[in-house]
Length: 342
Image (cartoon, rainbow, N blue to C red; front, side, top):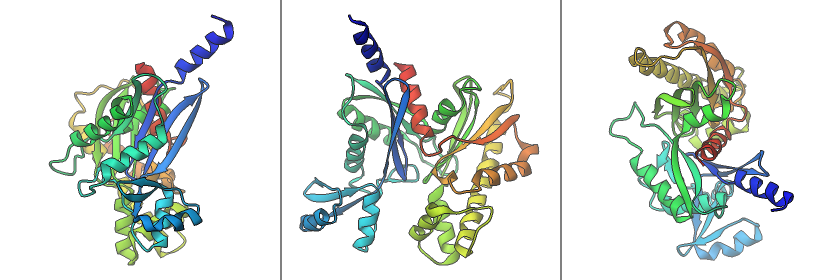
């Protein structure tokens, strides 16, 4: 084999493997291109179905769509824009971190989104690690069995070899390389908040909470008398929760602080229960990540609130830092996990 062919063969092998962050608000895929560089692709986890007679309008407005089960399907960010145009609500395949039980088209739409993001496998039975939440500790009779099974089925049908991985553990893989994959990751998503304590790449304890960005939106919306969608738009357009500018931003800031307090309080409560069973020999960092942590001032507010709880914290913390990219940290960690598995 020529030298150039050997280099290409090595590069092709390095490019095999995929990470898929399955979020209530966004799907994010991660793949390697050219061995070292990682490319991430995001698609909003939302869709709008329209009757066939709207095809002309979609073409004229240059809105991307596909035909699905006799209907026109608009997915991603364009679904939100088009829904506003028709004064309709975009539909979401997932709720509270898992497949929505009341959404009959959820499985089919998620298969479309996954195929759009990942494309065809680059090798036979290519490993794809996908994110799953831990079972929520504040909701009774809730588990992830059905959610994992459906995602696995979708990936198998596309030609991938699926592997579920805890969402917060994936953040440890992407963000805690200097600490030998040891740390406490808290992932603030749209539907849930996930926490995982890991030591030397092994999960010591993980759980989730049934509160996230959607909970913030609904609470702030009720407080000021506007819709959750409007609050979400305000939050995503740029809010500094340390210095809110108006009543709506103040409501967002107060509910985000309540979410931070709730998460830290639950970390203390659940980690304290197993304190004697888990030996963490050194101080570890807290990594704050997830789309709900994106507003300006979130990490500063987290550090401030952590000081209020510090005396009760069950493990020694070396520092508190934000993920390098809170939107892609899970997908990047899943990609690393997939390639380590292979």
